Image (cartoon, rainbow, N blue to C red):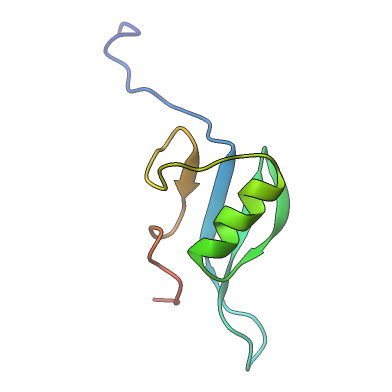
Length: 81
């Protein structure tokens, strides 16, 4: 297989993991990593954008796989399945 035939694999700076449930009475959240380091919890898209901005990352397109990867759901998945 040549390199041209291989699918492109990118390593985005931002990784948003699947929805987690916390203690009873607390809202669900998604763990967020930047550059391979856990940086906190996100409860909504705005939390992802604010955290990225705090680390100097401007996100122009939430669907750009070179910038952000959504694991266990997309940008609209904030409740457990």
